[in-house]
Amino acid sequence: MEIFTKELKSEAKNIVAFKSIVAYRSGLAINIEVTVKEAEEGLNDILCAGKPVRVSNKSFVDYIFMNALEVAQNYDLPMQIDTGFGDKDLDLRPANPLNLRNLLEDKRFTKNRLVLLHASFPFLKEASYLSSVYPQVYLDFGLTIPKFSFHGMVSSVKEILELAPMNKVMISTGGIAFAESFYLGAKKAREVVFDVVWDVWVDSDVSIAEAVAAVKDIFAENAKQFYKLDVSKRYSDVKPQPLSPSFQKEELNGPLTDVSLVRIIWLDFSAQHRCRVSFTFCFSELFNEYSFASYKESTSDYILHHLYI
Image (cartoon, rainbow, N blue to C red):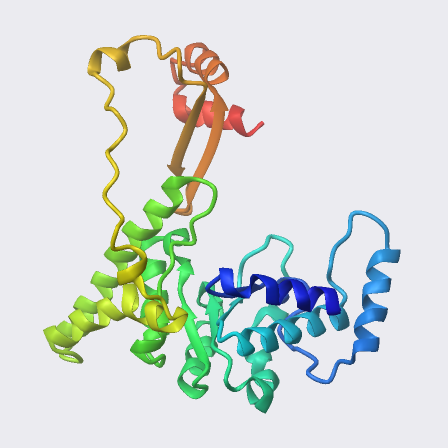
């Protein structure tokens, strides 16, 4: 345990926040009375269980989480907490942010800054409530955008803002692995927030000036304050990078000998963005073989079906 704490402290000056997936391992109902002995016994159980190792013993995970909170508080760092939906093998019930109430009431952690990620979906109202009651709780609705349908994204953001203070709500893209996921997250976030704020203005709940201020807060100012970022110094010397050389039309029509992978991004029947990457020769073979679609299935559907396999 001492080694773990030492490692956390050694990295504290190089990061802007800690992040926890405790919700996806043992749940958010943290045992705030867990002892070092119980944590060590839990670690022993994990190691004795054999491979593959999955760190999910509740006593051990809870102790590690609270230990990280103490380090975060000492170094004035916020803690990101995954809540609600996420991993495929997740049991949603323990991921309800209301399970954090005992921890939030504990005086040891009232000075921590906590942000609930994924808007805690499907526990949107619960997360919104917590942010309105506890000064240390903030919300981030990344991953709900762009994962949901447009209507789903809009309704989720509206539900969050019904109770959550505007200065405690943030947006992240939820992007991972592919550059397009960051782009889609940023693009859809702008469209969704515009739609939501427009409706609020039409209903005369806010003035134009207040609407503009709210958008600035959600997209930038709240995150700057929460993470204590001095972006003026950090990015003042950053210059725009030139775009990659554009392909000429003739080049696109000819053989692209330097292209080894084809990335396919599409919307499935539930309006969720999907992505597959295939070797160029595999894609070419499938496309050439099934270039004539049957009346039941389009060429693209057929190719995607085979790429799944």
